[in-house]
Length: 379
Image: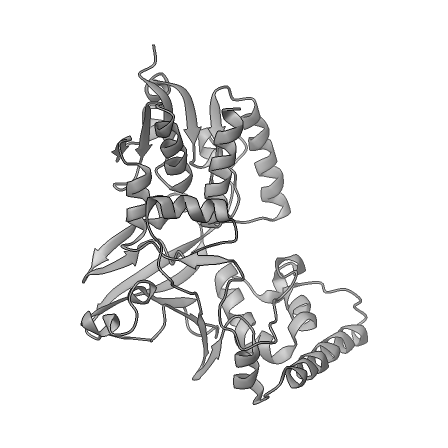
């Protein structure tokens, strides 16, 4: 007989939520992860009394009350509101594109003035394309110019996007930017969701709570002991790379990845904001995260005499590197479809999460997907 009802491969959000729900039902499960910690990419380390987002900034936001109530039943969330700033050379702009952005860029004061300026520049872009005999945007640059105009594109989109993707905007497909949100209000809140915040005490509080009373082992390589581990449980929830599960039978799925340079600085406040994007191409990193601003506000910022920053560098993924963002082009879409077909024929195995489903997931979507799959499984 199996020792466990379920083996969960991966102690990230998807696996942790699944384990939590199983435990509530009285089921016995084992959670394993090849890293030396739980939490997947939301794991935080502690430096100078500051929770450092080791795998990049994670900001929880959702309009799903069920998901919001679920995470707050594990740990209370704070009031953090994501309001990033873009730096282009010596100029600072608020994001997302809103009246503050337009006032900073053009010195305008009213929504009508801003809309006229945008419409003029969009018209110029369309006219230039027609003069060149082009009726539809052929690449990301042309798409962006027809959506937002030259000034915003060149200062806030072009360099940042080229660093993210590692290629020129003229070489990227137009569909990557289907729309660009423009807000004719003085509101710097990046997300439109109803709920937003960071777990009080950091994300480790969330995953520790989800996996409370669940047997968990880190530093375990599933594929090095797959047959033995599979035999220990009646079913498997797999949250790793789907192509790796099937031995890369059809080849590697591709990703973009991120490299971080983290520093402790002898100052209480380095940039005054959690997130500052560097949008010019000549600056090699895409953004700088100052971690204390996710959880410290007002005087608390200065009560901690040091600060921790992380510079983010976007790069091409290679085997052995941490996979972050799926490359959703035609080649990878077709390749994933082949692996998905194999997964659908795999007995007693659930494939879930961003790597197993080759899909970019916000945190709330991961939780919702795990809860939905669990509910369907137990109907």
